[in-house]
Image 1 (cartoon, rainbow, N blue to C red):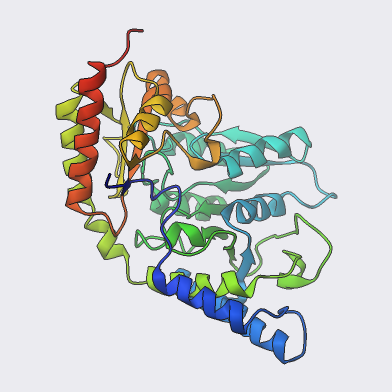
Image 2 (image 1 turned 90 degrees about the vertical axis):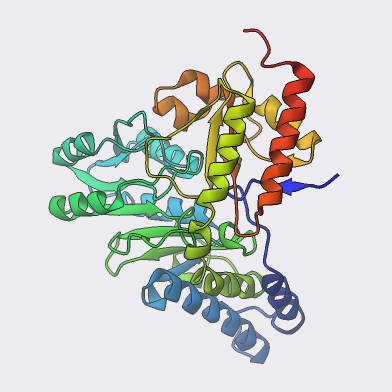
Length: 381
């Protein structure tokens, strides 16, 4: 059976050059980067090379890159940092239910801890935030931070960052952008944001390492304590082996947006084929600008996780939502925010990548055709 991977939003297959760099680092640069002897200095060189590579990708000074375990930690650092001072009254955090759980759950936690009041911005049926409601939210007193993602991890909807950045500027409000699904894929990476998050494994690098990018003066405070690494913002020994992989992945990502934009035609062929096989299916966020590689498809009458399992048995890897929410019985928070309760339970996300071919699309459609023939359509409600 030929296996086809269409879950690139969950994680990307590491580049061979990334694996090679990490293998070499594991042999030669395994020291503690905080040690002052030669072994430590060699490890530190790997860490600083990764920092420089990330800075080149995101267009900032290397000193403004904090290496983390991934984007979840970076999002926590950015949001909690804005509300860390114990000497000020609780401020307002402006965000939406479209955000990744590492943003929405932090927002809920801050509210429980009485550190922040959360203003949830309205979401349009197209999967983008309501800019008029965002503007109203920013007019309220005490707004300290707004968090707006670059690209939605489930639907691929591209958020209106140009307008968001302008609203942040006019309101003098800090902006955090979860840019995990955009680095290496889209050109606009919201350079004007106070903070941005990045994960290596979303751009052909290793898991377990990422970065928080911050502008000078952005309020930051450690989530963990116990060490002085990363200027005390992220205590714990930085892994030089993972850093070696991140460096290669970040440099690769500088060259890839044009290749990812070319996936739009493959995505279009996949969606057209699905609609022929399942005429009742519909494309989520179809009216929004979408990242070119994401097809989020609702199959009314189906349970999304069951269809994902059936596709897996046919050798096709897809998902029913954000990988960080997999294994839960909860419907998609993103699609619920868009007002589509049925889609929230019946959606399958297909996410393509730079290695995806037209043959892969044909295999996926043939697998779906076999599933439809076998069961004769969706089960009764």
